[in-house]
Image (tube, rainbow, N blue to C red; front, side, top):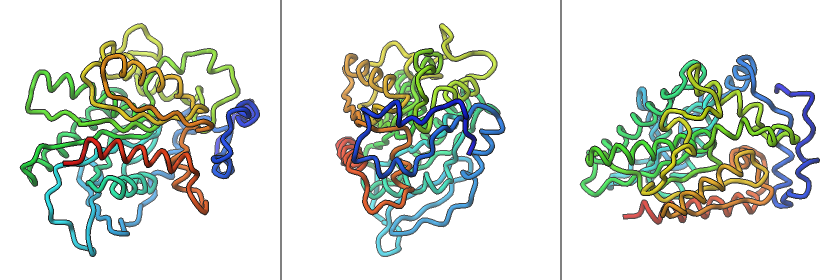
Length: 338
C-alpha cells in the first residue's frame, strides 16, 4: 500500500476518542494511506476488479448489462415468486474515483442488506473520475434508479418503494440523486420518489477538502484530506474546483440550499471520520427543513469501519457495528414495508 511517510499514526492524535469495542477491528486497518495521484489510484482500484464468486446462502444475483448486479432473496434455491414492490438501490464507495459494483466488498454489502430488509438490492455501476467527471456518475445512478423502478412496476401492481443507499462516495451520490429525483418529480409526477435514504458515512461536501484546519491535524484513518482533495478535484473536472463559490446543481449534496421535502434519511458516521462534521451538519439542516432524520454518530468510529468489519476475521462483530446495522434495518423497514 502507498504510504505517506510524513503522516503520523492516527491513533496517537485520536487516543481520547478511541472506542474499546472497536479496538479489535482497528488492528486490521492500515494507517498512513493516501490516494493523491493516478498511480496510487490505479494501485488501490486494481483489487476491485478481481472476479467475484456467485452469490450463495439463499441469495441469487443477475448481472444487468450497463446497470450493475441485481441481488434478490430465494427460498430452497428457487427464486421467490411473490411480488416485491420494494427494493434498495446501492451505490458503492471509493471517493468517486475507485470501486466497483461487481466487487466482493459490494457483494457482501448487498447480501447483508437483502438479509436485513428482505428485499432485492441493485448494486449500481457508475463511471469513475477522473476519466469521467461530474455528471457521469450521477447520470449512471439515475439510469440505474429508473431501471429498478421499471422492473418493480412490471412485476407488481403495488406502489413502488425504493430506498437509496450507499457508503462514502456512494452515500454522497445517493443524497445527490435524491435531490435530482425530487426536482424531477416536481416536473414529472411519473418519476417515483425514493422513500428514504440510508447513508453510511456519506461524502457530501467538497468544501471539507479545502478546510486547512482539517488538513493540518494528523490524518484521519483510511480516508484523509489529501485523498479527499484529489478525489473531489478529479470528480469536479477541469471546469470547477473544490471550494468554488458556485458548483453545478447536484455536484455536491451539501451545496443545496433548500433541503425540504427530501426523503427521510438515516445517516451513520463515526466521530473519528473525516466526514463527521459534514454529515452532522447535513443531518441538522435536513431536520431544520422538516425532513425526518436519524443520525447515528459512533464514538471512536472511523471511515470504512463497516467495510472492515465485513472483511476482518473477528469472532463477532463489534457492538457499534451491530447497533449500526440494527438501526439501518429498523429505519429501512419503516419506509419499505408494505
